[in-house]
Length: 181
Image (tube, rainbow, N blue to C red; front, top):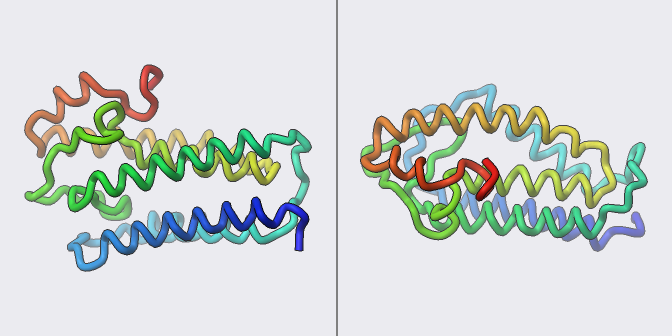
C-alpha cells in the first residue's frame, strides 16, 4: 500500500460521494436519450481517475503540490455537489442535454454568481486530484476546459431560448469563475 494511502482514500471517497449524489438525485427522473459517445467518454474518464487513486504514481512531477491539490479538489467537490443539490429537478445529464418544460431558472446558492458551477467544480476537482497525486494528468484540464466551455455555450443558447429571464441572468453572472470568466 502506498505511503500516501490516506490522501488516495480521501480522493477516492470524494469521487464515490460525487457519483452517489448524482445517481440518487437522478433516480426515477426522465432523462431523454443518451449520447453514447459522451456517455462512454464520461464513464471511461471517471473509471480512469478512480483507478489512478489506487495505483502508485507513474512519472511524478516532483512538485509537492499535495496541500494545494487537496484544497482545490475539496473546493471543486463542494462546489459541484452543492450546485447539484441546488438545481434539484432542474438538472439534466450532460449526455442528454435535455431542457424539460418544467425546468425553471435557478439563481440561488452558487448559481447567484456563476452559471455552470457543476462544470467549474468538476474541473477544479480533477485539477486538484491530479495535483494532489503529483501527476502530469493535470494537463488534461486544458482540452477538457475547452470542451466544457463549448458544451456550456451550447447549453446557454438552449436555455436562453427556453427559459424566461435567462439572457438577463447571463448579463449579471459569470460562466465559470466569478470576476474572471
